[in-house]
Length: 384
Ligand SMILES: Cc1cc2nc3c(=O)[nH]c(=O)nc-3n(C[C@H](O)[C@H](O)[C@H](O)COP(=O)(O)OP(=O)(O)OC[C@H]3O[C@@H](n4cnc5c(N)ncnc54)[C@H](O)[C@@H]3O)c2cc1C
Image 1: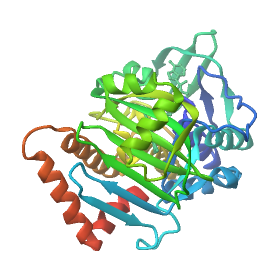
Image 2: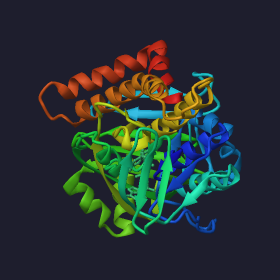
Image 3: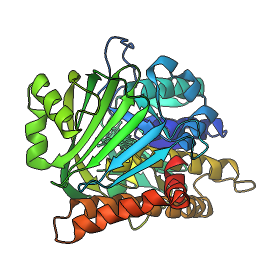
């Protein structure tokens, strides 16, 4: 089995498949080596890991390898509309320890890379993909350094602009949201008490403050492109002032502790996530707006589902058999479509400046806030 791409979902897929008893090779153009942890700094890329993803990562040995002091639980989520409507989710109300766990990318990566080695995955990196050829029984990836790697199944885990997907003839063009996400970390004057905050702004932007360990937060500000460019080029003090102001100074004064990074946002829905001896996972299979912090969680869900299908294949000897690929595609169709419908719907509803929409979206938030059962129904897919 060949996993092409070692982002977080690719790493998790490689480990889960190897732990399911398959022989796995993992290829990426970047080296897999992990930089030494630096306790004095914080990674600007952080993820809100759902309890469902945390349980999966625990099952493959990665969650327990994370340093506890670098993880922050989200105990409450407070969401505000652009006309004063508000909605609150509480872990306690949903009978969960946390709604999500905020973890740095580099910590997740280090924990997963350790498991890749521990599970006996054959690592081929750094090497970029050069060509992909299929026979009736194998997919063979030729690499730019002349090496070739083959497998009965190729797992395309190479991100939103997947080369593997193109090479397999699955045609789909990501649709830009016209927004760029600016991420950065800040020290704050007042404690955040485990509360994540999100504001849907009148300009169509969405600002999220996520708790980090100690009196620190990480922000994701999905802003119209011109504004995002301005934000990402501000001096640290000016950026901190804008972020504090945009969040109503909910945590007092902010100071920037990690310079901003910017990510253009794109939506992607595919006609198919499997083809002859190919399964797509992670952003190669779907692109979602980060407003619900679910992209990597969907990718972990793909990795978990694929490994579950493979380990329950019984008498089907061929790991790339069409029946297994169909099972995988069926398992992922509903959860991915549901998450895309919610995140894309919200991004459009709150991004629209059309008359009437502002009232509609704020009425919607208020209505949901009044019905605990509806709140629970909305939270469940994000938790799992
Ligand atoms: C601002 C922002 C905030 C986000 N926050 C969250 C969050 O809180 N929670 C959450 O769940 N998700 C979040 N996401 C989504 C998440 O970042 C993505 O879903 C996830 O990183 C996708 O991982 P991937 O491995 O599929 O793709 P990538 O991370 O793009 O990895 C692809 C891998 O393939 C390799 N590769 C690509 N092409 C080639 C090639 N030709 N040859 C060799 N190797 C190749 C690359 O080197 C890379 O290692 C956020 C996204 C953004 C933009």
